[in-house]
Length: 148
Image (tube, rainbow, N blue to C red):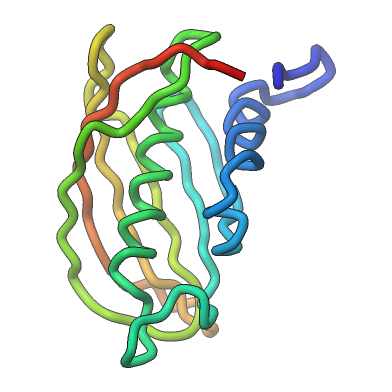
């Protein structure tokens, strides 16, 4: 879906259109918070869909959120008509949390023609608004043609 001429933020429209197509992110309740060239912030609420056996956010859910945030940051610098796909990522989990939500901010570190390197920080935001570091990730992506 291309942004319309009336859309005040075509980057946000591009990211939102792609996010709307992601069934997994829809199931996890992920929402788009902020978009700028080279940067995207997403949020995922705490629910029984994202927990591990002890009731905390599951590492797989944290990794997915970081992956998507970094990927969408890369998408903001990819040429029109292209998307990106993850080649690899490395994540460090810093702490476990329950309740509130996770917010992941992905940022482009280096955008090349063949690969894009991003980093993402995941923070936990408690119901009271307290922010705590949760995970950090580094990722490599490749631009691919958009096929839909």
